[in-house]
Image (cartoon, rainbow, N blue to C red; front, side, top):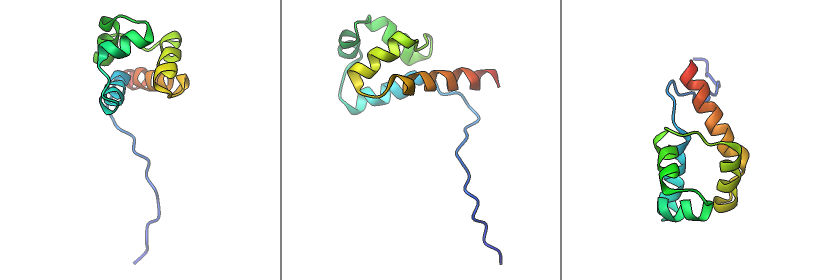
Length: 89
């Protein structure tokens, strides 16, 4: 019997808002949305909209996320771009 050594990359057929990832990061750090919003200089409402997928993560917001969370701004922007691409598929 031949062995199949192909590695398959996980490619979901659904769109995940980057805010869902943000919510998990905040939960892992035991940081509230309000605390995170204050540290970023945004309103809690904007952070809630990002988490709900109703507002995008723009460049300035990604830079603030990097400053507060330590994950590069490009990480957040890539999540946003991938989400938008998946919505168009």
